[in-house]
Length: 105
Image (cartoon, rainbow, N blue to C red):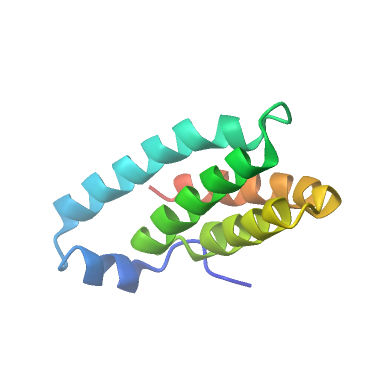
Protein backbone atom coordinates (compact mmCIF):
# COMPACT_ATOMS: atom_id res chain seq x y z
CA UNK A 1 0.00 0.00 0.00
CA UNK A 2 1.23 3.50 -0.80
CA UNK A 3 2.39 5.83 1.92
CA UNK A 4 0.13 8.65 3.00
CA UNK A 5 2.83 11.31 2.74
CA UNK A 6 6.31 10.82 1.33
CA UNK A 7 8.13 13.43 3.38
CA UNK A 8 11.40 12.87 1.51
CA UNK A 9 9.62 13.75 -1.74
CA UNK A 10 8.09 16.84 -0.14
CA UNK A 11 11.50 17.89 1.16
CA UNK A 12 12.98 17.54 -2.34
CA UNK A 13 10.13 19.55 -3.85
CA UNK A 14 10.53 22.33 -1.29
CA UNK A 15 14.35 22.23 -1.12
CA UNK A 16 14.16 21.29 2.57
CA UNK A 17 12.46 24.60 3.42
CA UNK A 18 10.01 23.79 6.23
CA UNK A 19 8.06 27.02 5.77
CA UNK A 20 7.64 26.36 2.07
CA UNK A 21 6.58 22.78 2.81
CA UNK A 22 3.88 24.05 5.19
CA UNK A 23 2.68 26.52 2.56
CA UNK A 24 2.57 23.84 -0.14
CA UNK A 25 0.67 21.48 2.15
CA UNK A 26 -1.81 24.24 3.02
CA UNK A 27 -2.41 24.81 -0.69
CA UNK A 28 -2.92 21.07 -1.19
CA UNK A 29 -5.41 20.99 1.70
CA UNK A 30 -7.34 23.87 0.16
CA UNK A 31 -7.41 22.14 -3.19
CA UNK A 32 -8.72 18.96 -1.56
CA UNK A 33 -11.46 21.00 0.10
CA UNK A 34 -12.46 22.40 -3.29
CA UNK A 35 -12.23 19.17 -5.30
CA UNK A 36 -13.69 16.52 -3.01
CA UNK A 37 -17.32 17.77 -3.05
CA UNK A 38 -17.39 17.63 -6.85
CA UNK A 39 -15.81 14.19 -6.89
CA UNK A 40 -18.50 12.91 -4.54
CA UNK A 41 -21.38 14.53 -6.45
CA UNK A 42 -23.22 11.88 -8.48
CA UNK A 43 -25.03 14.66 -10.36
CA UNK A 44 -21.74 15.70 -12.00
CA UNK A 45 -20.99 14.13 -15.36
CA UNK A 46 -18.45 11.29 -15.16
CA UNK A 47 -16.06 13.16 -17.46
CA UNK A 48 -16.18 16.24 -15.20
CA UNK A 49 -15.55 14.07 -12.16
CA UNK A 50 -12.67 12.35 -13.99
CA UNK A 51 -11.14 15.77 -14.66
CA UNK A 52 -11.38 16.58 -10.94
CA UNK A 53 -9.77 13.24 -10.07
CA UNK A 54 -6.98 13.98 -12.55
CA UNK A 55 -6.36 17.38 -10.95
CA UNK A 56 -6.29 15.83 -7.47
CA UNK A 57 -3.90 13.11 -8.67
CA UNK A 58 -1.47 15.71 -10.01
CA UNK A 59 -1.60 17.80 -6.87
CA UNK A 60 -1.12 14.76 -4.67
CA UNK A 61 1.89 13.62 -6.72
CA UNK A 62 3.40 17.08 -6.32
CA UNK A 63 3.37 16.95 -2.51
CA UNK A 64 4.08 13.24 -2.11
CA UNK A 65 0.57 12.20 -1.07
CA UNK A 66 1.08 8.81 -2.69
CA UNK A 67 -2.07 7.00 -1.56
CA UNK A 68 -4.30 9.91 -2.58
CA UNK A 69 -2.56 10.06 -5.97
CA UNK A 70 -2.97 6.33 -6.57
CA UNK A 71 -6.64 6.27 -5.60
CA UNK A 72 -7.41 9.44 -7.56
CA UNK A 73 -5.74 7.87 -10.60
CA UNK A 74 -7.80 4.71 -10.23
CA UNK A 75 -10.98 6.76 -9.85
CA UNK A 76 -10.10 8.81 -12.91
CA UNK A 77 -9.59 5.64 -14.96
CA UNK A 78 -12.85 4.12 -13.74
CA UNK A 79 -14.81 7.26 -14.55
CA UNK A 80 -13.25 7.64 -18.00
CA UNK A 81 -13.85 3.95 -18.67
CA UNK A 82 -17.52 4.11 -17.72
CA UNK A 83 -17.04 1.76 -14.77
CA UNK A 84 -19.47 3.30 -12.32
CA UNK A 85 -19.37 0.37 -9.90
CA UNK A 86 -15.61 0.62 -9.48
CA UNK A 87 -15.84 4.40 -9.16
CA UNK A 88 -18.43 4.09 -6.39
CA UNK A 89 -16.21 1.59 -4.57
CA UNK A 90 -13.15 3.87 -4.83
CA UNK A 91 -14.84 7.06 -3.62
CA UNK A 92 -14.92 6.17 0.10
CA UNK A 93 -11.32 4.95 0.02
CA UNK A 94 -10.19 8.17 -1.65
CA UNK A 95 -12.12 10.32 0.84
CA UNK A 96 -10.56 8.36 3.73
CA UNK A 97 -7.05 8.71 2.25
CA UNK A 98 -7.55 12.47 1.87
CA UNK A 99 -8.75 12.79 5.48
CA UNK A 100 -5.87 10.68 6.82
CA UNK A 101 -3.31 12.58 4.76
CA UNK A 102 -4.61 15.99 5.80
CA UNK A 103 -4.59 14.88 9.44
CA UNK A 104 -0.80 14.54 9.19
CA UNK A 105 -0.31 18.30 8.89
